[in-house]
Picture 1 (cartoon, rainbow, N blue to C red):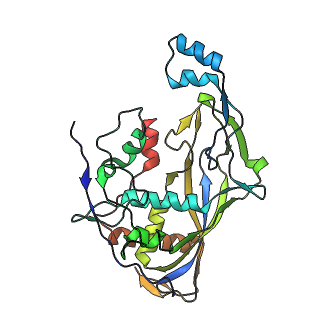
Picture 2: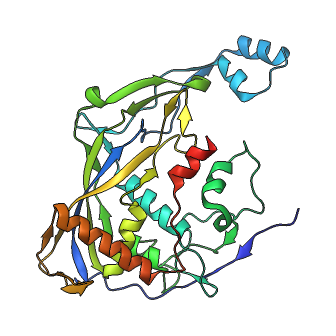
Picture 3: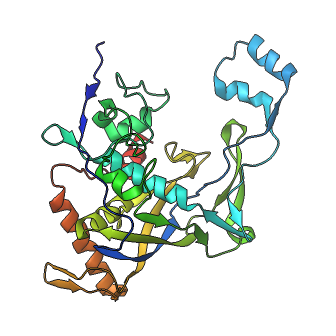
Length: 324
């Protein structure tokens, strides 16, 4: 079978000045709401192996991983991140989730694409077989995983970066978007469950309906770039987040389904005034409720027009649910 890899050129430009406030600047008060069990935390798993049982399983002809893991005993549950007694989702996890979605959503136009892959990995040569590593990921994102976008942007080596790196930062370049940790409204003992799952896995997961609140500070953005952020958050739709998100359902429980919500946007006084679709926004303005919803939807529409033919809307949750 021949390789389906293809080289794609990255459209890069000089990054904008971080030393002054220009364009749109402000703070987004946002939330992450779990729509299923959700786990974001340590990836370490401490376990011991019953060698006698493992030997018996192998001699009996059992070779599949699910059977062999009967000999493993997990010493403790994988923990959720907790600070001050409250579960949190680190800002870095939120940022990475949104950034990765945008990188994969951008597609080439006229031979160029406006995003590198910040975590450079070898492009796929062919579609993964069902049951092998990455096959669900491929079913969601498809042909983009064959693209060779070359090395990621690095301002310590070159003087230009792609659009996504200009917004989210890269080596030698500060982000224009700063994400706080998202803190749970409730305490750990109220919202966490110690779950025992198949393959001997144990983890602490928050219950469906758990709400985390945080902020996203932005500066020097255009209106369409602010709309692009909301597209990356998939406002109005569900997203995949956290451990087991591609497995979707484990031991009868759904994992990794959540949604982002925007609760309030406050523009700094230094923020540039702008008007579009008959809506005027001035520095110092705050938006909540119905006016906030209208603003977010119009910014998303503006971004969709700006990046028409360059960014696709992938319903990752619907795809993973169909695979299940």
